[in-house]
Amino acid sequence: MSLLIDDECINCDVCEPECPNGAISQGEDIYIIDPDLCTECVGHYDVPQCIEVCPVDCIDKDPAKVEKQDSLYQKYLKLTA
Image 1 (cartoon, rainbow, N blue to C red):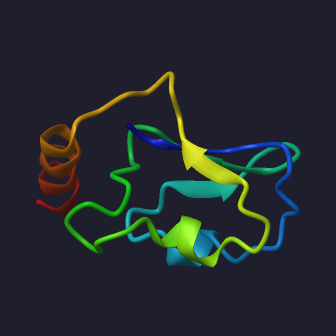
Image 2 (image 1 turned 30 degrees about the horizontal axis):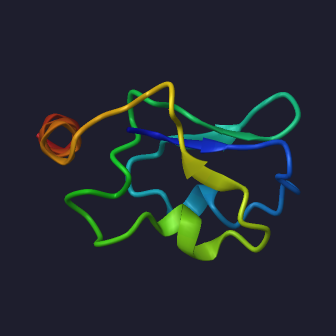
């Protein structure tokens, strides 16, 4: 499952540099996460770094983009190949 930034985002710029896959970028109004690049930091860290640093807790799992741990790891391998 990829992560999703909700509309409580305050555009603080803290999450973007923490993403090891470059999945976070500035959207029209708030930051967005590209589900094709998001591995929830699987392969890099034990926990998603964007969630760890977000000061307003506006990042959570995207229920529309459910992926299992193995799928996230396979995506990580593909992205880092």
